[in-house]
Image (cartoon, rainbow, N blue to C red):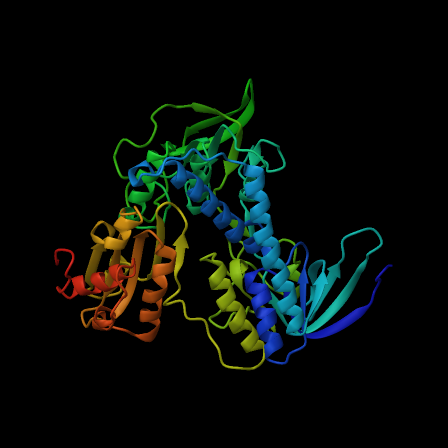
Length: 491
């Protein structure tokens, strides 16, 4: 059947079915708007299908396998057999359950689902092309459009993702056997998470990074335990190097690298030691695969934004205000296409606001208590201001810190690396927090809520926490800032 030139109309057209898009669509449906959601590949977007959920599933599985095989100290002796194909099948089952749930939720909230690629014809109409022979295309007019097309992995010269030995994160999560060796280009959060997964499954992992340390943008004392644990796993690091090309080798491929020159400032201070970079002009590493994880770029090139009068910035993002509005009336943008930070929960929060704005309701995005988490080993999570940022903003911050080595619960789970740090102003109001350690991604929620509610150190310190739990560390960190900590020396 050829759809032809059929034209339909809708109150709200959402382009992209990832966390930002489907959340916007569902919320708009809850506000009694007529909603059409266009998705060209899979509902749930990169996060549910190829990113957040599958990667965390494999992180959990690889952690379980590694811990079972390294628990002699607890009196447990085991030698787990790794079936990566079975592990991936389990991961895919988790993904299918969640993506199917997204479709059901959209339909239950009256959202009209449309498969295809949407391109702007003008500032009030898109053309949706349907995949498949004879499927054709159709036009959709709208009162409001919410762009939520997400992001894609960045390619680097000479490392095309359609070359079989070259992997992006999506392809790495779909391997059906554990590689003997892997070179990871990029030591950001994606590279470090996946390097840890494969190292725990028995792969010989080498990480090549153009900057002077891992995970730029995070404070150095937060990433130090992550790097140390990675080295304990046998991961080999080579900093201030750039991957230049690859070639076939006898038992796989050979990846060539050269010095990166003057590394750009990484936002997190100098490398941990002065001798971490390689002085050799060229170094080559042999491996079964090379995983390129140097960042993600917004997907805006499929939209024909110029037809709607929208210009992107120099990095390809769509500029928006705190109500998710673009420079064109009636067109909003949320999620990765709207700029950093590229976080699924940030996109979902923006999606809710965009739907409310489309419905004529008051709403604005507040990034003050926007958390971020990295699922490395150990995990890192942050919210609000760092100590340096607080000082730059004119505060004279109070700092409280509690190490997990002093936590009874951390000792019982065998995870004592890391700490909780709280930043407050001189009146005790929380400004920010950072955690590196077990379950950091879960623990940060309490401190994000505290910032959102305008809580003080006294509020957190006087809240009785269950014993023994990891969450007690947040209470003790607040007490430490007040000079009242019981289980660590006060500052």
